Length: 428
Image (cartoon, rainbow, N blue to C red; front, side):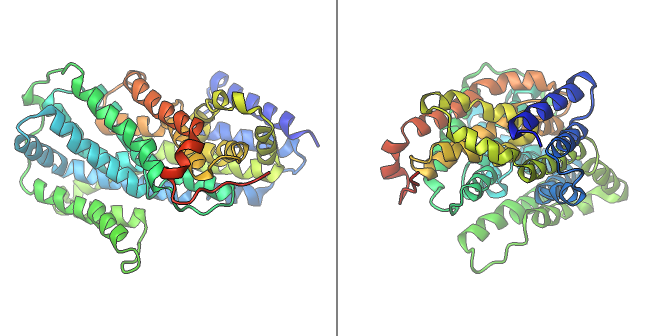
């Protein structure tokens, strides 16, 4: 049986060669990585763990498809264009006001679902018809959607990466509201101001689809059944049962059926279970398998111990490893595998601030190819845009997220007095 460090290094090398040189699709490359790690660790082919790991992120996969269904239904029915037309006219074609409205829509959606990709699919479809009418190009619109949805994912009450890290260090997911708001709201406000003051790129009004009869009512009902229901659920959590995100999104999408017709509904279903959503669902399943095998073979434990032995001064530089790993493992996978060891390495500080800031670093994975889930789905929602060009506009806001998170970690001791109601620390 080889040392876990050697096993991990060989596995990463095989993954890199298979995906970059042999052009193997990333989901298959992750499965090869998991098999290599299992074989080199002496556990053979643990079929049960391979299957079990594939279901590790099944809730996110279901939410991904449900979000795609809701977005496709709203778009195909004309609800998004009708809402965009009405909102822009009501705002008097004011660019800043349009950015504020759309940012709130994306941010709140990310808050409730806790996954940036699902927020992009669910509410991102309402954004292009609004921002196109106030002079933003499709490339900038896609970048704006990806950034604000990611900021919403970092925000409370639901932050899936933070939940994964808190579970890994055996601490309750409570008391995170203010730290997560600081980590998410500052970059979100900065992004809105940045896009508002960039030079407009005029687009002819004629190329924007005009509203469709019944589309406005469909959009409002769909948003009420999703965002409205989640808001009521958070206000009265003990009185209203939570049917889970996928079911809520599916029910909201069904409102558009009368405007779709038989052929339109079939097109929505094909769009939901194909293309970009299907590829990213496969990535999430493969990431679940990789995480399960790394836990089984002790590689994850080795990463924890190694990270705790790192010198404190160089730890913040090594935080860059989080989004780099996230380019393959996604934000959820990197929070689970790498975020937990980094949280342990800062165990002498306020753990609530630590976990909140590290989850923000993990969220930067949404802008790291080849996965870059939020960015890829934003390109999918807007259509006909290059991911590399979109990522160029994401760079400065992503740096704002990283700087905010780094400052929270550096000044965690000073911030713990007012940012957390009761600081949580552990002693060695």
